[in-house]
Image 1: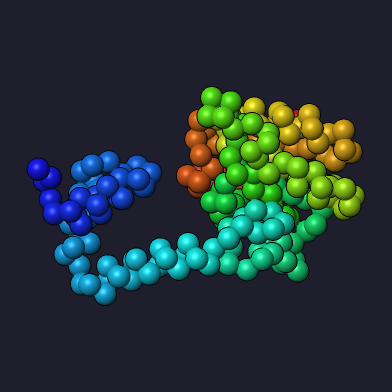
Image 2 (image 1 turned 45 degrees about the horizontal axis):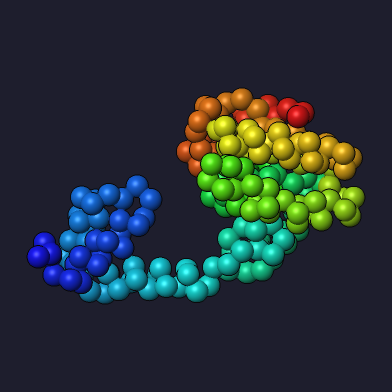
Length: 199
């Protein structure tokens, strides 16, 4: 016999699919949603639906956007000479908060992780190489997370890109090893960008 009515059980099960949400947190969230005004709960449902229907990947950098190409790729004040390579779209915010980087981006869609079945074919690497063929790009900044997977991805990209005649740098120290860029504060991210090094 289920603990709750079927609709509540379904809501709890769906909430448990979110990252970092276990059984108890899912139950708390479900009961919170039941307590709030119907228009507030439905506003959340509408926001989720709206995001799923309107957000897509930028065809140039693979950032998430509602306009293709995205605002970073079409920005008139963005330098076309530098591309910062990141793992996920939310990593971009850490770099943008420094207010010192004005180049372009490339979202890989993850990092190399053979144990999780993610090799070079699963990352957005081929289209990055295509972008370099025009010769306008002078530097690639590799800003993958300072984890084992991020470091392996950085080394792989460096070996792949250096023969193409582009300068390849890696963000510098300042971000603790094993951390995600998403959690870096502005000063730490600024120091990491300033201290990037040749790979």
